[in-house]
Amino acid sequence: MKRIFKIFATILVLIAVPVLAGLGIMALWNGIVTTICGFSAITFLQGVGLFLLGQLLSCGFIIPLFLGFGSLHAIRHHRGDWHDHWHKMSDEERREFIQRRREMFGFRNRPGNGEEVSKK
Image 1: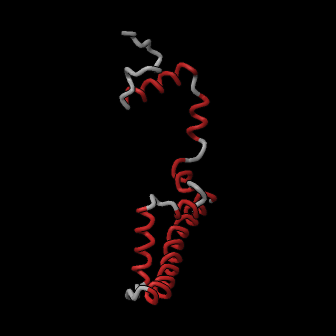
Image 2 (image 1 turned 90 degrees about the vertical axis):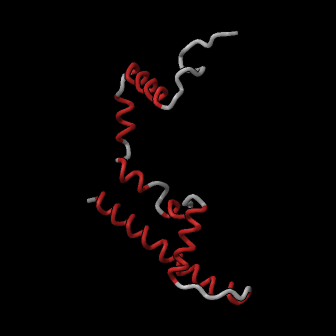
Image 3 (image 1 turned 120 degrees about the horizontal axis):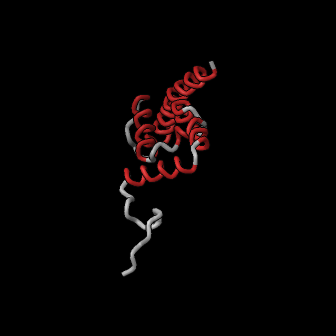
């Protein structure tokens, strides 16, 4: 039940934030920019579009701020599962896991991987 509430609240915020921001941008644009610069007035959808464009250009800084710094990620990835899994691993399992990740991402023959570096 708690998870369903979080999902519902997140969806509500994802809709409410752009709507409120679009109204605010539209009001400010039509009240200030049209008077000072002589530009034409914008519609509500154009205000939402400007907000979303700003989100894209700023790497989505504002929406995660309203969502409580990663609550979407926590809902999707069950906060704490990976932490528990890691702490239940033995030291040997951790070393094997780290070695597989290094090989996967191309860090095989670099210093600091537990291998000696030959001196020339």
